[in-house]
Length: 289
Image: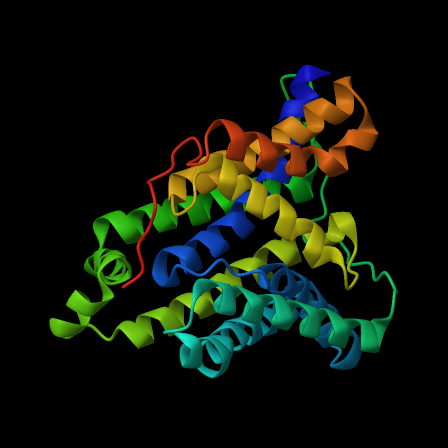
């Protein structure tokens, strides 16, 4: 039972990792905690539904449409709503993302109400046995995709000139501007990439959780807890926090009570803020230039 709970927790935690990574990208590049990231997650799944139901597209074309759409949504959000407030206090930027979150959720409820829409699995095959534990093909896809994304991020930010330039621009934007780096463009692209990451996570988990307007809110809290646990601004921390939270939820549900699963992320946030505010791999406070 223990091995099964851990394996299943890693699969769930992989989704938390993807969402937390998307939020971390934005935090590192703009120092904004994006409270509408959960709605990017939800819109990614709903975009696939819309493309299939209204346009009659296949799964591949629908996914490509959803990812490109959310890339554009993220970039437009930064350009139209965030950039005009770039010199505003942190709380103003945070409230803007909260307002956008409610707006996007309200739009989805206007069209779908409380309807729950199913999506078929992305892969159709039998379960995979791992040392006595069972991992379904959809979960294996989630874990594999997350591993590829994490590896790609590591290579990009640690081994490429562009990745290092983005990190430098996020840490010292004024200095980066002085040496000719287009900081506004980089931030705009990072908002697009962050939204795309949220959409990818939503598409991957939708066959397991179904698609509904409030699905983003639940995921936002878990991603926020993963960032707190791993450390705000830390890419390795987002990975560690997401996987740890997924396993912890499963262990709590399996050995204590399933009713506690929904509040595990809140307990994690409270515990981290009290015992170790910087998180496990926290990099300290990030200034804003």
